[in-house]
Length: 310
Ligand code: CP
Image (cartoon, rainbow, N blue to C red; front, side):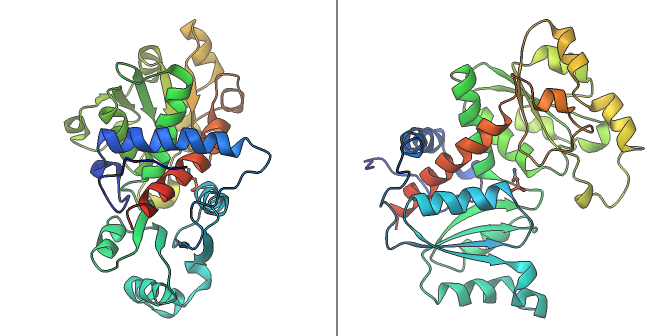
């Protein structure tokens, strides 16, 4: 795998800081790696002698496994760190933790952290390339890249396509990164949820706002359904999960009314029966597991292209 082109940045801190050309380069590189992943031997030597630390200060299933697999498929050396079983519990700071790990000759850092901006802070203090694997309610850039890549695989170019993002937009880093990515690729974007879960002034990002699920389903080609993030909600934003499911959940009955298929997506983890019913999540129009599959190729591309900047 060799490419003449380079990313415009040495870190992936957020989609906000990537150009459309960066996104296209990541997609083109991911397509090559997807081909590698379908071979009997799914491994290339591209990151041999590169050491990557996966630092997870917050829980994860998909992103963590996906990055680790991507790194191993690229032949990188991998170290995993979990805050819950580390000296963070004894009061060590983020910078001390990371500097200690880097002094063991680590080249790249993949980090998930609950504080928005933690990666930005780190990028001003360390030399290693940093990939943001989710920072609080701020950004989750590789999720947005794998989402848009999966959408393009399904419907072709996103220019002029209608993508509706449903659910807890207020607490979602996936929503913000999706909005930045989809707008850069020319899609029309709408967010839909209860007024309490839509941030004020989000229309300034060039998206439509709706509180009407039926109308938004009629409007879109693709529905990206997000989970209610109860762990980030310190007050009640809606009366009950049952009521949320009734008024804002995506059900088969609602989709049947459309009279045409739309693509169904969800970044996971899914709260079945709350934001989406099982028959929708598991339907033939759902590409939820393709999203997860594409995540490995997208993360291989991100790691490979950042390593080329070293
Ligand atoms: N989509 C996503 O970020 O899932 P995890 O929290 O399991 O990594």
